[in-house]
Image: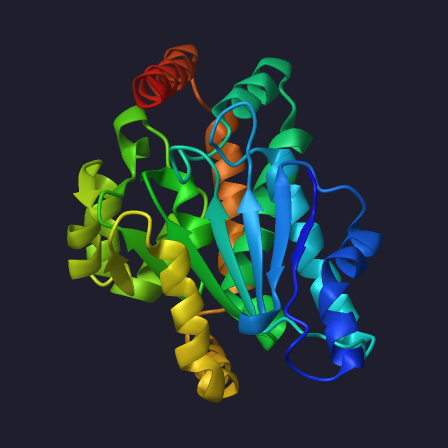
Length: 305
């Protein structure tokens, strides 16, 4: 996946501009190739976009999740090393007709067919590490934002909702359908509970129903709903409006995170429980997961025309 710079050299000195224009290269020097992920830096807003291009369909594949995690770790290591850091806000969006149709069921079923516990553990641990990074601002260094369009399903919601801010376009829809298939998303309970409370989170996860963006906002699960096609501009405006209070915003988010139960422990427990649940699925239950894949394919066929 190609990496893109959008650097504005009219701001700051020459050294700062050079550091800004080179930030994507500096990141990729540390991470190596980033399958299914494109980085775009907008210097004017001190904004680094993670543009996700999952293949062959819009789900959180292991290569994509691994790419995101490697960038998160690279940014933290650059700060720890005292390197110039022009990035203050990290924002996620996806290319294509949907934000995410959830976890990579094809990968799960392949692991189950081979009884590959290690493969499931790797997926769970990588996904949980990304989610923790989003919630903590990569260790308290960045503001994290997610811009959602189209459909967001199940485990595909959690990395976005873990961000400090999540905005959705009006036609976006949200659903945790896993309960209908005797399944559950890895991190939904700890992430949703932090945002909307345990009772409402449990109701949502057990309902299996679709929510409009307005309904999701009404439950406190979104910071804003914007017109279709306007989510990226909203993120840029957020960067401008919050620039003078960014450090305080990150500090407040970090303080609330400290008040909650230990996230790393919660995610480790949730990930381990998910792996055991997957390995205990019966043949009939595995077949039901296969039907989700078929439903995803039908949905994509309708969206793509």
